[in-house]
Length: 151
Image (cartoon, rainbow, N blue to C red; front, side, top):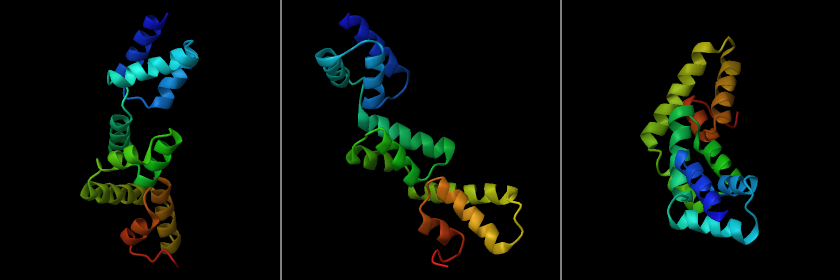
């Protein structure tokens, strides 16, 4: 039974990078319990099918490039997956500052094209809200929008 579970877990991990919590949940779904579950997890880690730092790097880079998520949203999502602070920092290092700033500029430009609000201050508030909801740091957003976040 353990070889079959290990094979299923390896296949699950091979498809895409996974965090420990996802794999643990999958193992529980397919019937692993107690000591057997822990041995399977250890085997996956030892054979490098499961690596949280690699997961954090892939997750952070992917969400930034494909969905234009800011650092705050990426960190929040990684913490929800119980990723360590060390691995989170490793993931965030994948995002170059110049690319991060370009992504914010692109996000502002994209939203600006479709925003219907005419009033200048309300328009800027809506743009800022949109960028902050995407996980970009409020101070950075306000700087980009040439506004003081305290007003």
